[in-house]
Picture 1 (tube, protein in one colour):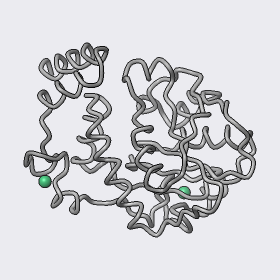
Picture 2: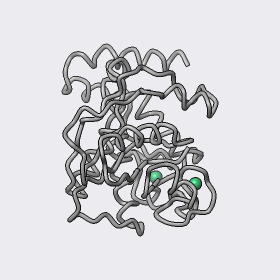
Picture 3: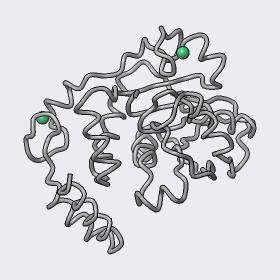
Length: 248
Ligand SMILES: [Zn+2]
Ligand SMILES: [Zn+2]
C-alpha cells in the first residue's frame, strides 16, 4: 500500500508541471502491460480484448430484471426518465474493475482512453441504434469542482470524447454538479437518493427537442443517472439515453 500511495503522491505532484512531463513519468511508473495476460505494449492486448466478458443486454441496466426494450425493463422505462441504456462490461469482472481503478484512482488517463475504445467497439457491435439524423447531444456525467481538482480530469469526459468522435455527436458541458456529495458507494440506496438531491444543475442552452446520451464510467443503482434525468426533464429534454463502461 505504501508503494501505491507514494506513486499516487508522485503523480499528483508532477500533474502541475504540464502534460508532457506527466506522460513521460506515467509511462515509466506504469509501463503499459495487458491487464489480463500481462504482455507488454498495450493495456489490453488484441487477444484479451476479445475475451472480455460483456454485460448481458437482456438484463435491465437499473434493476437487473429482464429487459423489455433498449436495455431496460418495463418498470424502469416508465419510472427512470431514460429510454435507452447500454453497458459494455460488468464491474464485477476483476480485470475490468482493475483497469477502471487504475484509470480513476492512479490517474492513468491512457487506461481510460483504451477503455473508451473498447466501449465504442462494444456499442457498435450491439443492437443499439443511434439515429444520427436526430438532434443528439452527449453529456458526460459531471464531477463537482472539488472532485475535479482532486483527480485533475473527469473520467466520464474521457469516455465521452471517444463516443463523440465515433458517433459524430457533439459533447455539451451544460450540466454542472453544484453540490460536493459523498461517495455513492458508501451509502444505502435511500442515502444515495438524498445525497444527490439538487446536486446537478442544467446551465446550458435549451434542450427542447433534443436527445441526450449521458455517459458515465460505472452505473450501480442508477441513482446518479435518475437525478440527472430529473434535472434534464426540467429543461424540457425530449429523450434520454445512458451509455456506461460497466454495470456495477
Ligand atoms: Zn492480453
Ligand atoms: Zn428495471
